[in-house]
Length: 224
Image (tube, rainbow, N blue to C red):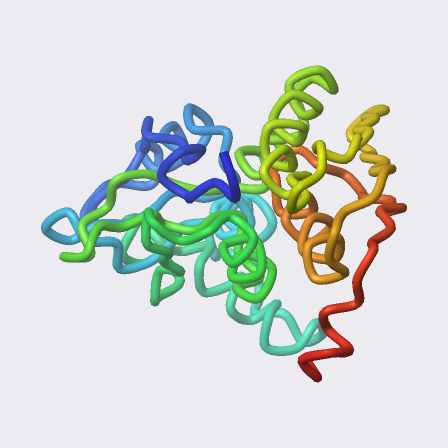
């Protein structure tokens, strides 16, 4: 299987709104999506996000009728301004954080963390919205069974176990709650190290204990 792409795990049931969508409809869209934020689109392309925090500001400052906050800094003042908002365009925070559907999920996880937002808008090459990605979708890969992981890993390592003019070396794969233990011997050090690296990139693997040994240190010979 290898590392999954965003399009394989994203949520396609997107509850997007337009700039002119009124406050109550935005709130209902967010509650329906259960994603922590709602994308705002213009001609199908995401231009911003409305977060739950932005919507709750209306309760915090009673629709903007409370006095402007003295404490709390710029964030508190921004929420006070949002409290008076009536449309998605007034509520949203531009630009929308985006990720392409063919992005590996490891890279997407880094983008989500760096964005500081509840979700990423998944887009096609023309920047049209096709889904959303949250930590919920990313974490779904850990629902895979140990048996499924072990079978994929064993199939993946079988070609590496072939030895010139010798029978295949036994490679043992054990998986316990997503933690993989590799035992056995391969011909080359590069294959043993690559095996651990490759297994770590399989969706659902929590950790890898690579105990594989090798007959020849080809990395020392080549200088890599």
